[in-house]
Amino acid sequence: MIEQRFKCPNCQEIATFYGNPGETKVVTCAACNTKGRVIIAGEKQDNNVAIEVSHLKKVYDDLIAVNDISFTVKKGEIFAFLGPNGAGKTTTVEMIESIRTPTAGAIRLLGADTKTGFNQIKERISILPQEFHSFERFTVRETLTYFSKLYKKRANIDEILDAMDLQSHEKKLYRNLSGGLKQRVGVALSLVNDPEIVFLDEPTTGLDPKARREVWQVIANLRNKGKTVFLTTHYMEEAEHLADHIAIIHKGKIIAEGSLQELLTTYGEKTTLYIKNCHSEDARQLLEEKGFEAHSSGNGDIMVKIDYKEKVLEVLSELRHECIEYDGVDIRGSNLEEVFLRLTGARLTEEAET
Ligand SMILES: Nc1ncnc2c1ncn2[C@@H]1O[C@H](COP(=O)(O)OP(=O)(O)OP(=O)(O)O)[C@@H](O)[C@H]1O
Ligand SMILES: [Mg+2]
Image (cartoon, rainbow, N blue to C red; front, side):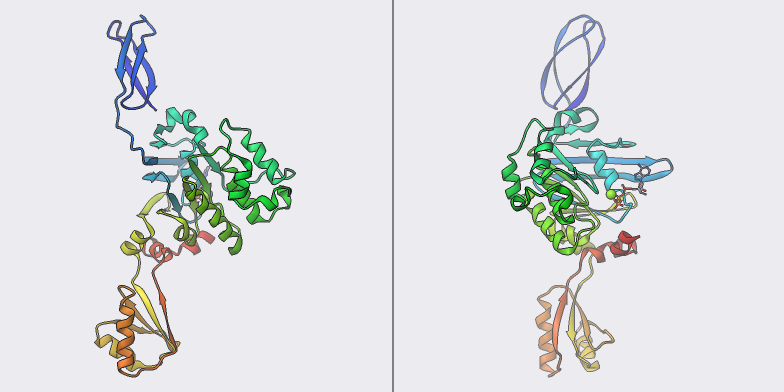
C-alpha cells in the first residue's frame, strides 16, 4: 500500500489517498466533489518478496545502531540475521515490526510500506521478542488460547500443539516449564494467527545444546509449513543449520550476505585435511613437493590445505605410495566463524560473550 497525491483538475486542491501500484481508484475531491479515476503509480510488487529493507538507519543520541542497511527476504525462506551482541539485530527487527521508528530508510512488509500501511498487514505477521516471557500461571494450552483470541484469524490450537510437539505438556503451567520448553511455547505462540512471516529474535539464547536442537526442529517445521522466518541469532551454528539466506551484521552494517555456501566460497578458508599422528617431516616435504600446502601441527599431525574434498584421495595415495604411516584422517571444512573472523578480525563467539 503506498501513499499517492491527487491534484483536482477542477479546483487544483490536493487530496491524499492510498492504494497498491497499478490499482485504479476513483477519488473524490474533498473541496469541490469532482470525481476522478487515477492509476496508482509506483513499482510493481514482486510477489516472491516478503520483506524489503532499503537504506535503513537508526540513531540513538550519538550512537548509530543501524547504519544504512538494505536487504530482501524471499517468501518461504529462513533468513538469518547473524551478529554479535549489540550489532543492531533487535533494533533492525523491531523497526521492521513497526515497534521502533527508523531514523531513515524504507521498509516493505508483504508489499506494504510500513510507514503508511502497517495496519493492513499486521495480522499477517507474528513476533517472538527477545527474552520473551509469558504468564506464569497459565497452562501451555491456556497461553495459546489467550494469545489466539487477540487475532481475527486463528489457527487450530491442537494442530499447533501437535506441530510443535507440545501435546504432552499442554496442561503444565508456563512457570514450571524448562527453558527449552518455554521457547518452544514462544515459537508455538507465533503461529496462533497463522502468520505468513514469523519474526524470532534470538529464540535459542541461553538454552543448552539439546534444547537448542529441539527449538531448531520447531523452526525448521515453520519453513515446512510455508512460513517465512526472520531469525536473529548470534550462534553461527544456528544460522548454518537453519538458514537459506544469511546476512551478517556487525556494528550496524551488513558486512556479508548470501547462502551458507556462497559465504563460505567467497570468504571462507580452504578445507583442511588433518593426517593424524604422522610424525614424518618427510611426509610433509613430499606433499609440499607435490604442490600441496602442508604444515606440521606440533602434536604430530600434518595439516594439508585442499581446495575441495576430492583432493583427499590424491593426498592419501601420495602417502601410500611412499609407505608413510599415520593413524587416520580428519577433514574440517570452513565455517561461518572463519568468515566472521576474516571480515572483522574478531571471533563471533568472543564478541558474543562480551
Ligand atoms: N532504546 C535504546 N536506546 C539507546 N541505545 C540502544 C537502544 N536499544 C539498543 N541500543 C544500543 O544500540 C546498539 C544495538 O543494540 P541492539 O539491541 O539492536 O543489538 P542486538 O544485535 O540485538 O544485540 P543483542 O545480541 O545483545 O540482543 C547497542 O549498542 C545498544 O546498546
Ligand atoms: Mg537483540
